[in-house]
Length: 579
Image 1: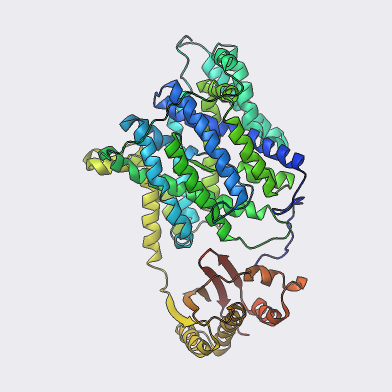
Image 2: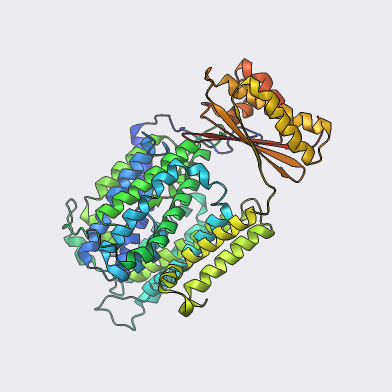
């Protein structure tokens, strides 16, 4: 069941479907753009500089990144044809791809990188369509381990940028450490002393302070910025695609697929989080919106690879901004997407961000990686840490670090395995997934039955539940309680069956420490039953459902309804206490 209290503690001024004034929406959209603009532009700059790519390609990659980020932000807010969440979810260049992208450029150039991005992006479309399949594999422990390892694999690149100076600046110039320290100090001070609202602006303020300090040492080249036009197009520098599919492609593809999966996990989490801050009354998560968010993410990655830039992902900054301001109307996302696309046609803005010195960029990225690492740690700690979770996270993380540093039998591996496992994020994620699947084998087996969604199926269902409970050692009263919970759920589902007789239910039962969990898979049901159960006392439940919901509320310990486009999953947990 939903937690007690259907009201959110923060005040939502405008919900998703509301229409605030256009000026307010535009101002909110512009504010979030200002917060994320540096991340969108600087991520491809970092990768292409590390790969020693020509400046023309960097300018082109920034142009495409802004264009794709704006377009996919617009799609996320619009939410049409199963593409987009229908919420304010801003998109931007993904930092998760930094390490593998640098490796791809060094192995085969920009055209190989773009081919890998396009190939990996295709994973997200079937992934979004069958998102429910991953619920028990990509757990918070796996996702958190992967996110922590992304920070570990990218950090050496950021450290290397700390000491990179322009060619005309002496190597012993104090400009690099001074500007980096100024950037660190500004970000930390604003984050610590600036309060919740100013904390969002701390990266932007840090970049401004660091660049100002760097300019005093000749590290900032303002001439290119001064010459750039306010409106215009960059010189075409499309890298093309490498369709030779040589060994380097196949060796790097698994790493790109895993990072793409990680990006989908991040979007999955953001798609849930944005729903929790966008309504005044607490609602069950609509996983159809999450599927739309992942689909839009995949489309953005596909367009990025075809266009010549790095993949994108959802930015959680937009969630924090919505939570702070209370303005969750999708109109904000529509304005924000339009502003990002317009900024793509401003060489002046792009050149200003591209001109930020390497030490300042490195300090900015290091802070973001620290926050990313902590995000992974928080995800791991979700729901507490037991022995099994600690085993998955600990082994996955340290095996990833070991392979990243080439300390674990690296010279004894076949060439294809050495290339695959040399990326710590890939090695650690594979280890965490393997351990998760291994630990699932020791759990109590599930007992399954499929029945027609009809009253005539009730005796068969009751007999199945009786045998399951008897094997668990339950007494008669507890068995009746379990049967009654299933019966009332069946009644509620029948009310929504629209008279169709071809619908079936698949019920899986699992015994777990005094509880029996029933997992029911059914055709889409329309309204969310978890929400209806939570609204019982508010009088929002139809009279024909009220009795069944009151019975369910009194006998089930947990009731969860997850809705996807093509299937619904209902989870009931019932304890062995008597009626």
